[in-house]
Amino acid sequence: MATAVKKKVAEDLPEKVHVWPYLVRLEFLCSLIVIVGLTVWSIVIDAPLEEAANPTKTPNPSKAPWYFLGLQDILVYFDPWFAGVIAPVLIIVGLMLIPYLDVNPKGNGYYTYTERKFAIWVYSFGFIILWIALIIMGVFLRGPGWNLFMPWQYWDPHKVVALVNVDLPYAFGFRDYWNSAIFGGVVVAGYFALGTAAYIFMERKAIKNVGILRMLLKINLLLIMLGIVIKIVLRLAFNIKYIMVTPWFNI
Image 1 (tube, one colour):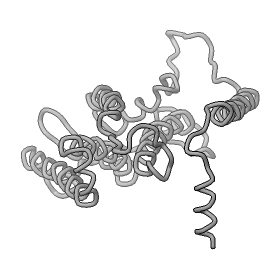
Image 2 (cartoon, rainbow, N blue to C red):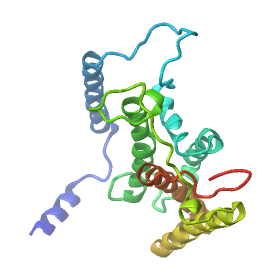
Image 3 (cartoon, rainbow, N blue to C red):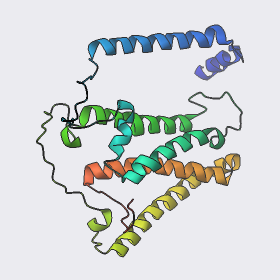
């Protein structure tokens, strides 16, 4: 009975609808909700304005503008060459490649959740976890010395945190540079190899739609995004500083 009703309703719905009033009305309501939310936010919470810059008094911590705090917080978990150069470039290049990698065989105009579950979840994961969550952490949880403080804790400027971070090879008993580099390289290569194999196995049909080159680019960008989250969890939960350690660079 329910299936028949749904089928009848789907048949009665028009194939196309006008932008006005259907789309514009929803956009107008959404904009009103956003404006009201921002207005209440600005009234309830004071802007974090400070005194004029004083060269004799350096703030602790010295924070970038809120929209850069996500990148500043990544510096805690990665080398500067990755957090300050590679990660922003990957974000920009990845966003630029979306129209070329995310090919929809049905054509343009299919953006519903039912049609685009995977794309919506991947984008939401990257935007919320790798951007919004890091900004929130930088604004509300990073206190003096760039230490983590819970919301109920006092921001003690004299707090001292012992440096107990260790590299992953060291945790497994590797002390030599070359053995550590080889072990770390095997871990990194294994992560990408196993991740690529698992994705291709689960999405075998997708290769026919997008091609092997596009598929490999999508997989590697996805694995890098997941790898950043994994590295953050390893640092916060197990004090793992680097996965691969070499005499020239660290990963």
